[in-house]
Image 1 (cartoon, rainbow, N blue to C red):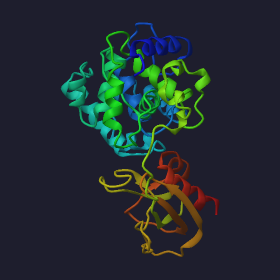
Image 2 (tube, rainbow, N blue to C red):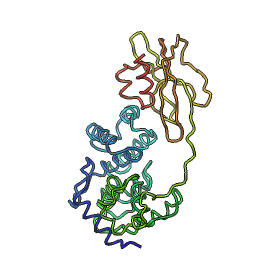
Image 3 (cartoon, helix red, strand yellow):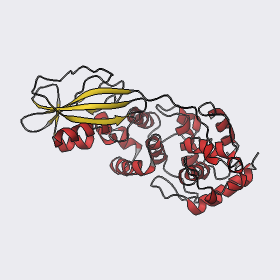
Length: 340
């Protein structure tokens, strides 16, 4: 087994020299604690997207709502509009529920223990551990996809994902220590992001190469092993770009539960193999093409139709405002409709 203490020291030395500068992060070894609100917000945003995509959202959120109390006071619809483009909209609802719980039950101050953080609505094991260690400098085992990849290569773990997760978490726990606990998970994440990449890892730059069992075996990129995923199903649907006499767009609010729950969107048909047309109003609908979008569990082709009409059942919105606030799939459809 690789020597844990030597590996840990080598990675922290590397992190001191190569840490990424991120808006939610304190410099390595500075001893400065990061605002737990900023740590929590960044971790929620980064769960399903990349740093370059999340960073502008983080800057806008923290400028607009600089404290958790500010975020807790926002209207649901305003928060959902600001989240548009980050995807996985259940996270936005959980974000608001957590902010309100912190403001209501904890006086606007995040609790400083992993167990108390885990009790907050919408906070899972990963986020609780990340906030506890990064914001409060407490030892915690923070395991994301980057950490899983590093551990699987360091120890040449032959069990494929997802079955390997308990073993990878156990191996990651070997490195948890009272020494610089907040810097350690961030060092691992930076290593996984920039050096120990999913494809074409830069082993020649890796500070852990001297102890990597995957590298010794000659096939580090082979790890982590994965079970072949089932083919993603494909669905079809119709999206309707309805404009009134003033050129505004007729939007609707989707049901709270389900895909894109609580979000504002274009009227659509069902999304299935054989969707019904289901136009929102009688109009001379004109088909103007289709857009493609990929969700986690299925891909979608939306045929876009444009028409003119009115009605009290719509949220009439200026086109520019609609483009700025709609989830990506609806923004694509609206762009197609406006270009026709």
